[in-house]
Image 1 (tube, rainbow, N blue to C red):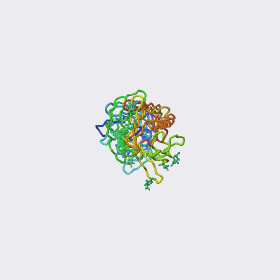
Image 2: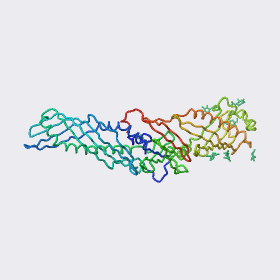
Image 3: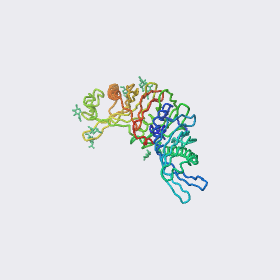
Image 4: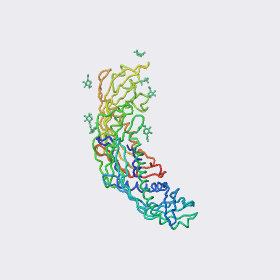
Length: 476
Ligand SMILES: *[C@@H]1O[C@H](CO)[C@@H](O)[C@H](O)[C@H]1NC(C)=O
Ligand SMILES: *[C@@H]1O[C@H](CO)[C@@H](O)[C@H](O)[C@H]1NC(C)=O
Ligand SMILES: *[C@@H]1O[C@H](CO)[C@@H](O)[C@H](O)[C@H]1NC(C)=O
Ligand SMILES: *[C@@H]1O[C@H](CO)[C@@H](O)[C@H](O)[C@H]1NC(C)=O
Ligand SMILES: *[C@@H]1O[C@H](CO)[C@@H](O)[C@H](O)[C@H]1NC(C)=O
Ligand SMILES: *[C@@H]1O[C@H](CO)[C@@H](O)[C@H](O)[C@H]1NC(C)=O
Ligand SMILES: *[C@@H]1O[C@H](CO)[C@@H](O)[C@H](O)[C@H]1NC(C)=O
């Protein structure tokens, strides 16, 4: 279950040697919560266990009675809360003490030509189970889980036979009880090993990369095997976005960062600026970072129109050379916008090229001038009440004329206009960011008590989780 929980958070998926750009830490508190939530799930699993037929023979003075117990199903099981703990540099140890199980089934005996049969009830008392699983990663970066030790012991078994000549051989139960106990003991660990194998197959089948939208794909193989100590489990993921179209590697690599431990949370997540910048580079390399701005996109209240006649105060010669023509601005990112994260705030540097054209009545586009605009935006982010909130301010904007078909002009007024337009856009974004954006919810779990801290080079998120009431069997 604790594994399933992790799996739910992220579609897990070793590109060894790289620095992990996304790190996840599951603390002991998270493990205990997972266990608590998972106990019911284990109970359901136990109730579905199928037992193979148990057969054997009993020697009585006058011959042998052959017996078979078949169709054994669990009627009720009473699962005490298991103990679960991290095992340093290995994995996870689970112990269950004092598990009682009630079973029911059919019995058949044969003694020479005499066949008999009926039903029986069986109670298994005081079952103890200790299982240790090792967590690792395979060469494709999937999390792997292997059962490395399992021990089970059953204190006692009682069996009551009904029907047929059950009264006669009920007294013989004591002779074959030992056989039944050893059958059950070996069956329990076989079930644990099968369940572990099933979970491992499930993990191997998971995608280590998935498409986020039609532009980007997100690669999240593990970069290293899980790091486990007595208090937590750390997973490091590649955490890189690519353009689906180009799948081009960005000209920068993930820097190492250390996700600080913060006591009291179930889960910590660190997302490096590399992850953000790989997304930005993905959009850039896919050619998505360009936009055409025409007059109908300018809000009606704006004093500036994309009409050569209203540009006189910015570019005096323009209305004289091309009177009364609409204009288009083709805006292209010159570089992938770059995030740089600092304690408490982040910066986003955006460098664009703006190509301004005039549109003749017959539709011909006449090139006017090209501008380089470099801006730098500072943003703060926080998580409160389950929402991502923030604020953006324009830190710096500079505008330079890179080429012109209409002669030289001073760019100061145009820079002011660009600053005003940019501030307006950020103001609108701030209204949205102040209201907050609901954090994405997963099907089975939601984040609660979430805190976000911006650090040098990464964002740290600390959180507890809460499972939502759903069908438990669908965790896997
Ligand atoms: C894995 O990815 C492939 C292709 O992107 C997709 O068809 C498949 O459904 C995914 N499998 C899972 C389990 O998400
Ligand atoms: C401006 O662009 C939009 C969308 O690209 C288009 O629908 C609209 O007709 C254009 N307006 C003018 C005046 O060209
Ligand atoms: C541009 O603005 C001028 C003056 O406001 C106006 O006369 C002209 O019709 C406008 N051009 C277009 C194509 O809207
Ligand atoms: C943005 O501006 C800040 C402060 O002026 C500076 O420290 C930072 O390096 C700039 N970032 C980019 C991406 O230009
Ligand atoms: C469009 O009009 C302009 C001037 O009005 C003229 O110079 C140009 O040749 C015309 N283009 C076409 C394709 O008609
Ligand atoms: C604004 O950017 C320019 C060039 O990018 C730089 O020289 C200047 O120091 C920046 N100003 C501030 C206040 O960051
Ligand atoms: C263009 O104008 C700017 C300022 O108005 C001036 O610094 C620059 O030298 C001029 N360039 C040319 C080529 O005239």
